[in-house]
Image (cartoon, rainbow, N blue to C red; front, side, top):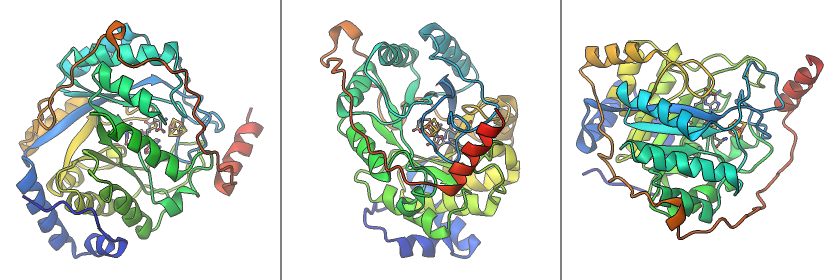
Length: 364
Ligand code: SAM
Ligand code: DTB
Ligand code: SF4
């Protein structure tokens, strides 16, 4: 068993990240083999249950209402629509469904009740259910847990330092508070970030310090490469190199040995050889299906061909943590508290985000 350390320093992580590549790959692959089956990769499907029109100003995100992108907004999907999509995902080999909503935070009310029903429905299909709905309170996390939620995704996205250059409408601390609220329940934590947003290597290391020093460490850490979308403040950023992706995956694997490391957004830019290196370095999950939330992703048949070529098998559901029980709405122990939590609004100005907002106004 590899030792799980919660006291990684930024310098130690940087030293790992910057090792000669062969040493880094060997070390990461060795740890990966001790803790996981190296030929098994989890296949998850993303479902954007509520798209676009988000009030936040995340500089990378095509769903922020203030930027002018081609994303078509959609109201919350129905439970039946979600069930049909989940069944389709299951039949194409997915063991997990991750439902994303372009919300700043969850509000108690009929829409949240509908999401709870979606969670119950997918858990009853014997698939792992994950949600990413923005900030949540402890009571909301408990209600999701009771419905049968397996994981809650809430990314730190980058280091605390660089966060202020990416988002102005909430603080890094708010992200940690939501993760803490999820931790008070039996729901597993999924939290990672994005590389290729113009951050320094110190920021990548800083993000891994923040994640690895959580106790327990997140069960799942998605590593996304920025998908630069036209209209967002980050539209002109060049794609991150595959070497950076491999180094980031390997370093994540070394500092969080038991975690499921997800090779997330940005795979359309990566060759099969590049992705194979990421799997060797410790990535053991992908998002499948031709769309992420709003941006393109490789076709599922191509991914299955790649799995065949590499001798990889899709992971069965509930191999890491057992299936949660679903409590029906009428038997719930928790009430709708009608909470209106006060989350931070730091409100500082980010030049790049302001410029994209102005450009969007002019093009209307
Ligand atoms: N609104 C919720 C929130 O922000 O937590 C949930 C949905 S949000 C789209 C989920 C995650 O997707 C973000 O935290 C970010 O890491 C990732 N993401 C969004 N846009 C991206 C992009 N253009 N490239 C890479 N990752 C992106
Ligand atoms: C995560 O870290 N990446 C996924 C999932 N968690 C929700 C989302 C990627 C979104 C990429 C941009 C888009 O398609 O809108
Ligand atoms: Fe909204 Fe989430 Fe996109 Fe930020 S990342 S703009 S919170 S949907």
